[in-house]
Image (cartoon, rainbow, N blue to C red):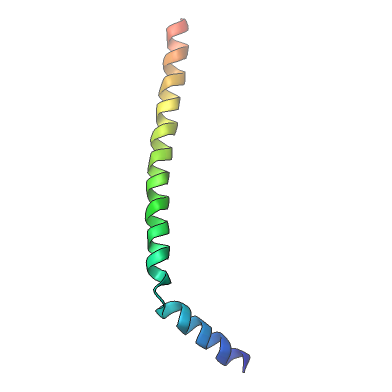
Length: 55
């Protein structure tokens, strides 16, 4: 009986429109990740230029 309930739950999760919500979350996560990488690269460039300016 537990296997049947688990199977029905898995089927319901797979067919609901929640997949669209998860897709949106991953798209937002990708955008935030790209922006974070750009910010980190800019900070590294700024730190390197600050050390070169002191010499």
